[in-house]
Length: 487
Picture 1 (spheres, rainbow, N blue to C red):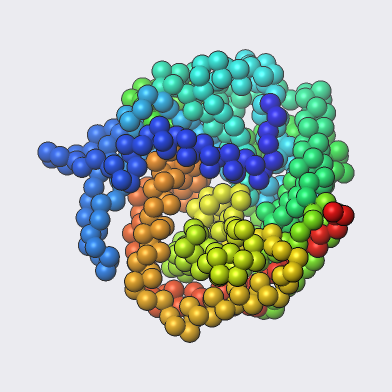
Picture 2: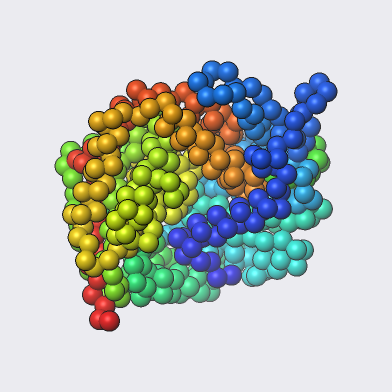
């Protein structure tokens, strides 16, 4: 199976969530059903409850069904039934991403993702893929900062088949020199085609972490240096699989149309006797406080227009400032009504778009577990200087700092966040992604039902504090692409 680049996978996931969101439209924010009678939620039902601890008007909020437990071997299991459509999504997340791959094996986590499609004890090469596709399903996998994931969406009556298949490759991967050599070539070709020989290849999703961060784990080339990819050997692969692809380092999420007790029986039957492993502790990922703005220029022989990206170090996850940054992202960068889109695109015409966000291009603000950047980028006209763009960025941030964040502006940001959040939850994969991330990183998938409340706790004072500390110029890295292509 040819796996797309990490960047394109992120786009594919967004598209998949949108497609599934249409299929499951009756679960969306606008059509959430009201629970009647004794207000007891049944499978596939969204419960409404009143929000009374905010200055915003009381509004209905989602209550996603969550059943969470662990097998004796340490495997985390999250079940979230939804009878809206006769489909089921299985997502298996392993708590290993490219952030913590071996220092002399850059790109190894991504390489190993490819190996997981090369066959297992009972399914030969390509048979896993064929099994899903011939049963009317779709599948994919990706490698991110802090996890590697695999998912399948299938007709509901094929749920047991997919659970068996995922357990089969967790139990025993077909690790051979032939498969390793083949996938080394595939990944190296990805790097060449999609990064090295592509205009703006790796900009800014692969480039910016390497410029903005200081800790190697956050700052290395996670797509992989070609020499490191060549250096990977069969023993590396076997050790990596035995260590990180174990049940006590994973979560299985099932979302969709299924019976809870039946799913539990299948998960116990197929995953219950897989052996756990001794997983090493996560290394120190901390980043030092940035005290001075950093600026870098990257020559691009294939680009014909300049580009600029900016990044600010994020607050620690799950703090008030973290949620405040999520709302500042909505105000400054998300949507055509955002301050930066209006200032850079609509008013000045510097570019056709400005993109970015928290964990931009590789996920969202919830599915990571370490230091992170709030990042934006644009490809702009040659007549526009980098300093002009940075000046506009400073002006928009300074206006918020000087004028303050009104309750009205804060309320609008919460509405936008709520819309974005529940758009993600409306799709099977989007919901599974949140549940898996909260189970892996927080041991608490119920957080999916607490997010809106956390955003509603944020006050204008917290927003102002966050602006002052995290959107200061000395916390910023600017990367400029210098075009070298001859037109």
